[in-house]
Length: 203
Image 1: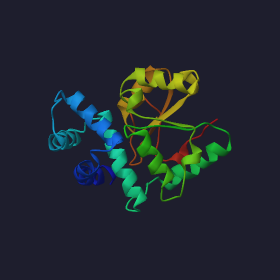
Image 2 (image 1 turned 120 degrees about the vertical axis):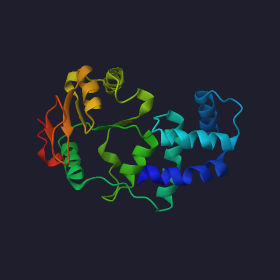
Image 3 (image 1 turned 180 degrees about the horizontal axis):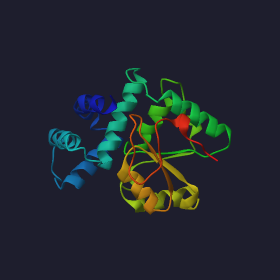
């Protein structure tokens, strides 16, 4: 729901806010990353829509999507969806004193909106920190080493959860423990797998 919403609203958002400092900085980053230094606003919008079609994890695109989502949340058009079993598990883990972090290809701003304006209420206080593509791509082990350093723990003391086997592989290669989430059943090759947060036993 979020990504189609951003794709629909991004062009008008960019046109309306292109002169604002925060948006202008991201448009400049799009020009730099695309190699089109002289691109006008309409050309930048076309580049952004092309990146969306290609599922590019470009940082300026993620930042702009986050701004569009922020407006949607403020306007009450969006609510973050978090599975009920995940909400219950996160609350229990936090109550036990565990530090919880999010690593997503969505921007940190978007992550905070999703959890802060969720269908289950404000879940933002459950998390000790957020990471996005500024820490590196999710399928590269160096990204996870960077995150472990930022958290301040040995990688071996961090459990990483994902439903994408390439992300689990990268985290494992960085020394993290891994657990796959497969809600439709099945397995994620090379990693222990559960179907629900309710099935996760954290020592």
